[in-house]
Length: 96
Image (cartoon, rainbow, N blue to C red):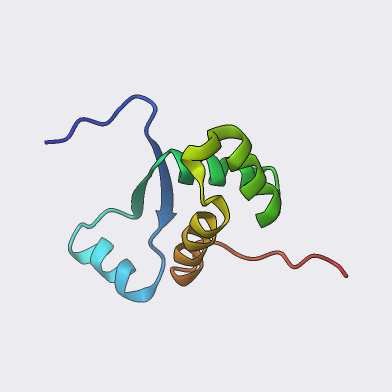
């Protein structure tokens, strides 16, 4: 069994669709899904809490992690794509 590090960061997602509610009720499944994030994902989520845009987050990742984060923008875009596909983020359109 893998030990969780004390600084592990998780994204906690409520299981709310119909099928999930059935499995929670009748099969005693957990009501939340915990997704363990790597250090880049945890950093990106923290930046989202500050309502930063994608370019700002990418730049902050590059500044914080240096070469280790590169290519920061494609990495961030893939992470956001995964979150979006699962409906775990809602995009806030900027005013034009």
